[in-house]
Picture 1 (cartoon, rainbow, N blue to C red):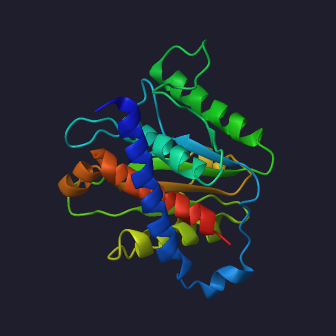
Picture 2 (tube, rainbow, N blue to C red):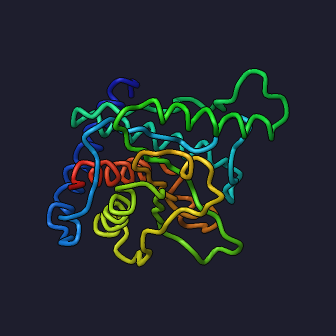
Length: 232
């Protein structure tokens, strides 16, 4: 099968997934959201966590978190494009965004984080969506978890995304949106509405296999895109 034909088929399949997700979310009852402040009129900034020498966590089969994060973000960009949304991507390849003068891995990580914050802050009226993967000692935990920054509108947005993932993809996910820990640099140094989605646990065999699967990545991307499109 030629690559162009395969890509066209993948996009058609993704479009169908998005329509189904939008249908499920359209009936999502969230009366408390009506008075909440959610700013989604400006640009959407997509952050694929980690990158380059900083691979983040490593999955059970040895896949770096950064690779899975990027795969989901690239698919999310394509899905949003079907609805005319052109998000800003902080990275589109497996690279670190550190300054050329950074030498050690620690210096590169610090420089990368500061540069990401600077890039986000340059986007007027933007909203940050950061994609990551979760881990835990042991394998019993699974499911996506959405965290929010201590900025106006972030909590309401995170709650909407958490509820959307439950409604459209993970009906048994009882997690509640949670404020991001103070130790997460980017989320505590931006001034715009910002959420971070831990898409699943790389330490759970079943979920790790799904997170590596392109079909599941497309399904997850469609749900995340639908959540953005249906945010009040």
